[in-house]
Length: 251
Image 1: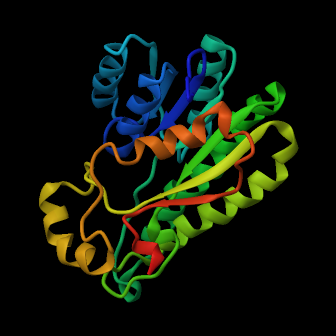
Image 2 (image 1 turned 120 degrees about the vertical axis):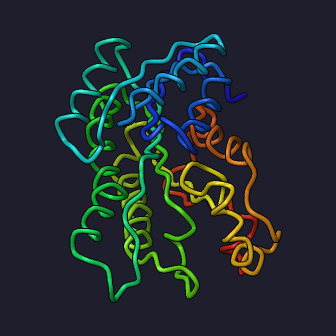
């Protein structure tokens, strides 16, 4: 079960953090991986890690906020492999500030990378999935797209990630008869490049007070969720929002 041999998977924002973890999880199940990111040197390092598992990896330098670069990346994947089976829309980030201090530029940058890029990659890679009548698209949102927060000032990020959720539902419904599933994964707080060990420590009181398990997520605890949504066997699962958050959104 969940054997991804002969599957072509594209992971955006895979030069580090959760994107790297997702790419490695798919590769361990046999998928051939194309990783998209802006940081070429770090991306090449991730590609070498994947190749060490005995599967092929194609690193592509790509800024997902730029249409031409996404189109070129899709062309490269199709030219090399002839198809794309799995798309993980992981690239994200943005600028955060208290609402009263957020500039239009900060807001727009966050929307561009966290929401518009998801639409763009889904559309462009999805066009090839439509031709093949098959695809698994997983949009990485966040628990911050499901709830507000009185302790964190991230309204732009929350708005964008919430948009990802309803875009996921809309795309899932529109493509439901096309052999393509579209689902959203909502991680809680996990160690990554953005949330490094020092930052995670400062967030610990917030995490403990808001999470029934009273801890952050651990490396590897997202793997089973991503593999479930990427698998052929999950053919009747579409339009769902799956939190992996230690119970944060349950209370």
